[in-house]
Length: 229
View 1 (spheres, rainbow, N blue to C red):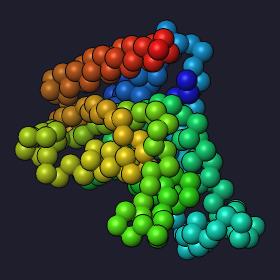
View 2: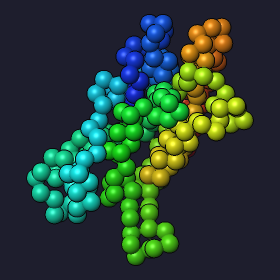
View 3: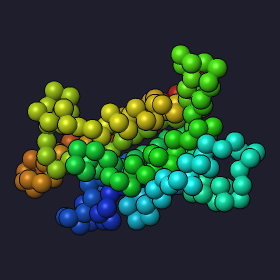
View 4: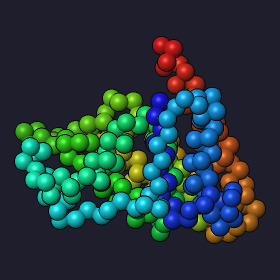
């Protein structure tokens, strides 16, 4: 299998190495390391958006993306080169492990730029004007891909039923975008209470790490069952 580890935190060290570091990097590293213990032959591709943010969509990008591939001029192919690399990387992955901290109730700008680069007509979704009632199609559907979203939040109560759930614009948005292109198997774990820095944060970290371990065990079991079928 091939894993795609995406880190999008602006904090460059995991919080288990630096108290002011990133909780999401801590969780993605834990997930991948635990996954590789019984499967050391699996390949891991790391995409660090915190260090190397994707380019924002530009006028040239839009013109190139909506031009027919056989009619693209050299400057158009150049404008889409980074996007093509990100899409190719995503298509090659079986399991996407994305660390995405909550910034101001949503995703970091660098992760939004990533989304804008991978949601591509003709590459990850199709559009057919002859079907006006349902012109869109998910081109990654049926590829058996799975997304694991590992988050962190400064406050608490962002899960369904919580007092901050109405302003959680992260998990639902990420889930819906990836479902739009055909990746519907989705799991989400998050650390809360970061801004408080008290015992509640430590308890949330411990609970999230246990949840990561349990999820890895669950997905490893599913992988073994699929391979044996």
